[in-house]
Image 1 (tube, rainbow, N blue to C red):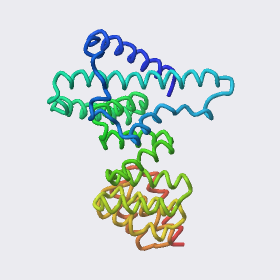
Image 2 (image 1 turned 45 degrees about the vertical axis):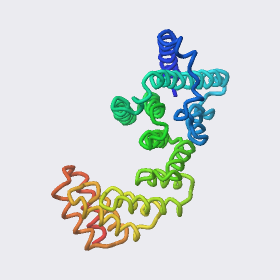
Image 3 (image 1 turned 90 degrees about the horizontal axis):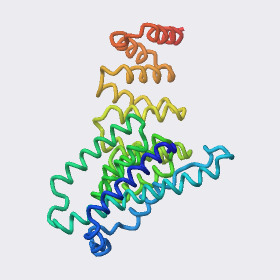
Image 4 (image 1 turned 60 degrees about the vertical axis):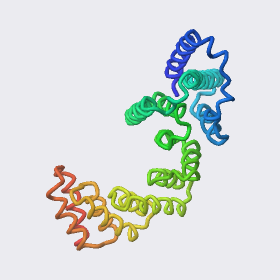
Length: 295
């Protein structure tokens, strides 16, 4: 995470510290977080959250900046941990005053809002802000599968495979794995060179969402990347059947048909593509390849 982002989080944390301590100092002194059973975090969850603050890669830092990098890590860990603890203390105070309001409509609305913001920030590649939103959700509900999936996906997009794998595996072992979790584990396994496990995870993702065209096309792409075009044909055909108007899936099917030398299917896919592809130059390239196959 860039230093300016860390600095921003630090400022927010400090402001929040003074506000909460000033407002609730008398009550905070009387609170014992350990006495509230609902706030005790399972060991595995706590380790995952703590590890989220250990992610400045030394390989991306210039040797002359090594001292600065260590300082940045310490600052980042301190402010992140402080931010989470302060939010939790504030919640403990509110729980002590209104114990029956825990996980009421306001909390649910807040979680939904935070998750929506986090997903939007992830799409915009604002990694630090997105991560902070997901972590805030976990201070409200420490078992939120959506927050863990969001964090895992965020790490995966940043190619932080170790952190993403740990989080996805936590969801899988906890019985909260859906097609997104298995697809994420497949991508990680492929990066690790474990082709067999990657295929197994993709098949599981497809079993969960058999009517989602993208999952079929995803499996076809995997076979194609691993020089197995014959096996790619069935899943890409299924994808085209589910979404016959998709230019992307038609082009993928045409590519596979050309690679396996299936002239009949290649011609059929090209004919369908002619009515959908607006890029005439791209269409000409496909036509030339089809003509070459005809000989």
